[in-house]
Amino acid sequence: TQASALAAFEGSNTLADGHAVPLLANVGTGKDAAKAAAAGAEGVGLLRTEFCFLDRDSEPTHDEQVAAYGAVFAEFPGRKVVIRTLDAGADKPLPFLTNTDEPNPALGVRGYRTDTTSPGVLARQLAAIAAAAGQHEADVWVMAPMIATPEEAAHFVSLAREAGLRTAGVMVEVPSAALTARHVLAHADFASLGTNDLTQYAMAADRMLGPLAALNNPWQPAVLHLIKATCDGARAASAAGSASGSAAEQKPKPVGVCGEAAADPALAAVLVGLGVSTLSMTPRALAAVNAVLATITLAKAQELAGIALEAASAVEARDAVRAHLPVLEELG
Ligand code: PEP
Ligand code: MG
Image (tube, rainbow, N blue to C red; front, side, top):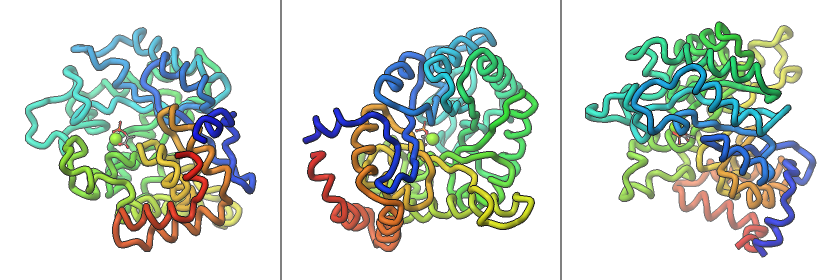
C-alpha cells in the first residue's frame, strides 16, 4: 500500500544495484526547508529565492537576504543546498525587478536576463548568498535561471566566483541551453534541468494555461530528447575539460532535475536512465520516488529511457514505461 511505501522511506537514495541518486527537495523558505529535512530530503536541489521576497516592492537589504538564505542553510548542515538567484518575471513577477506590461512575459526580461535591465541586483544577491554561506555548514551551490547561451553561463559563473562562491552552475530550462550544453557546461560546474520551463519552451505552450496542459507534459518525447542532449553535453564538457582528455577518467559534470518531472516516480526512473545524477522535488513526492527507484537497476533505468525516447507521443511514452514498473500498482 502507499502507506507502507511511505513509511519505509528513510532516504536510501540508491537504486537496487546501489547506484546513488540523491533525492533533494525544492523549497522557498526556511520553514519549507525544515519540513523537507523532516521528510528525509538529502539536501536542497532548488531554493527558489524569489519566494522569500514575493510580497516586496523594493529590493531586500543585504541583511534581510542573508537572514532568509541562512534560515534554509541552517536546516542542512554538511549537506548540499542549491540556491537559485532571483527568477523574477512571467509566472513570478517581482515589482522591483520586472515590468508586467511586456506582451509576452514568458519570453521577456525574466530570471538572469534582469541583470541587464537592473544591473547590480544580481551581484548584491550573490554577495548576500556568499555571506550567508560563510555563516553555515551547508555545502552551498549557486545557479542562475533562464540561461540561454554559453556567454551568459560564463558571465554568471564569473560573477559568482567574484562573490567568493565556489560551486556555480546554471539552470537548463531554455532549449538553446540544452542543445548547446557542451559549451554551456564548459563554463559551469553543474546544470539543473528546469523541466517546467523546458517543456513550456520546447512545446511553445504557456505553462499557466490549463487548455494547453496536454502539450505541457514533460513526457513529451521532444522534452526527453532535450534532457538527453543536456546529459550528453555534460559528459562531453567533462571529457574536454579533463587534463588527460579521457572520458573514462573524468566524472561527468552533475546534471540534476528540479522541475515537476522529478516528482513523477515513473518519469524519475527515465530521467536517471537519461543520465541525470540527482532529483529534486516537492518533499511530499520523496517517498514514492524513492520506493520506485529502489526497485530498479541503472541498466533498467537506461532501458526505460530508451523506450521513452522511441515513443511517438507523451501518452505512448508514459504508458510504455509504466507497463515495465509493476511496483507502481502497489503505490496506487
Ligand atoms: C522549472 O522551470 O522547471 C523550475 C524548476 O523552475 P520554476 O518552476 O521555478 O520556473
Ligand atoms: Mg523555471
